[in-house]
Amino acid sequence: MKTQWIIALGVLLSLSACSQIDQTMQVSNTLSPTVEPTQIVIMPTQTVQVESPTTVVPTVVATNRQTDSPITLPDGFQIGVYASGLAGPRMMTLGPDGAVYVAERGANRIVRLTDNNKDGEADGIEVVADGLNKPDSLAFYSDGSIYVSEPTKVIRFSAPNSDGVFQDREVVISGLPGGGHATRTLLFSPDFSKLYVAVGSSCNICQESDSRRATIMQYNPDGSNRTIYASGLRNVVGMAFKPGTEELWVSNNGRDNLGDTNPPETVYKIQQDANYGWPTCHAGRIIDPDFGLSDSCNGVQTPQAELAAHMAPLGITFYAGNQFPQDYQGNLYVALHGSWNSTVPAGYKIMRIPINADGSAGQPVDFATGWLRSDGLVWGRPVGLVELPDGSLLVSDDKGGTIFRIYYTGS
Image 1 (tube, rainbow, N blue to C red):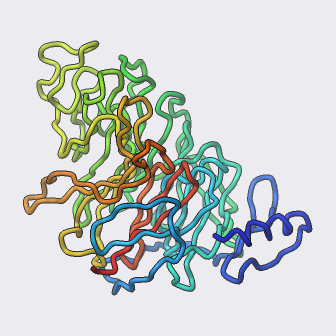
Image 2 (image 1 turned 90 degrees about the vertical axis):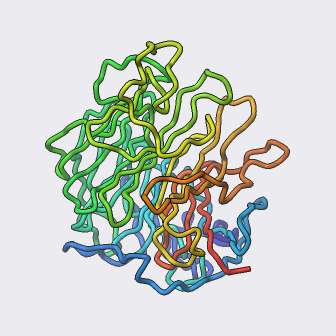
Image 3 (image 1 turned 120 degrees about the horizontal axis):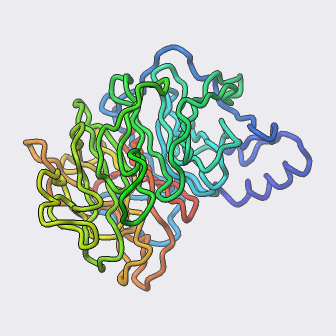
């Protein structure tokens, strides 16, 4: 986004007329209190699949727009601004059209980003659904409809018009417990037969009265057949299936007020019906001093990986492309939103977790750092991750309203 189109947008709104902005930026006019028109093609209604990044020959495109402050990456990697001017962008997903769809929580809408001229930057911000309440996560179903989460419900949007704006909306899950940890990450199973919804705890540490709290819920795509898939998970945010498997991996946020180093943040490979310990046991090995007993960790699942306390792991993704070097392929990438009450700030970066030959997780290592500056200033907070078809990696930042693109050019 360039400052010129932002100025032009003000003129556009005052004149209520359509115009082009900078020839590469198309921004929707205001349509109604609920939706805005866009410049996108109609999404197909038949069963569709997103093209796998592994089938695409990577084309490395430099991004000219630089970040506000330096981001440190391994040798050969670069970062640039893919889109800016967003209000609290959270989770992202690829649509069946290959575009990036973003839950813009601060604007209560879903937007679409395309890069039709392949210059490594989004062409514009196109609104496809509006009038939402703090949308946080989104997932495409096999028929091209898109599911969007709010704190207490999940809505399915379908029937896009000629501008690509979804005309039909249907609440498929209602009555989710609100308050507390209120993000509701969505994920379909690889065969689209099940929908998973992460429901965080209502508190920092407590015994919940609602059995759906601190769980991963499983539903049929129509919202029926509700069941608790896994429990004892204080606040799962990131969810991803390991490519080529039915392994569900998640990031989990640990409790506060036990000091700067305990308990660790965790990454789990989920087993159905398993207990992951909260609120009595953390990371499968730490008995909670307030709610735990001597045997509280017996039978509790242990994590695949541990991260430093309070780093707030959010979005995760397995890198399935081949633009990155071999050592970076197949890794699990984790967006760390950053601490809010740690004496020493922690997080505000991207880490990667290598996956061993036996399928277990290796030691987490830093991948992209710098949103927390050396002087203590925080200028960005990573949230969501999505891999583009060319093998580059997008990172959403809900503090700066920016989406970054990380790509590999070689040393």
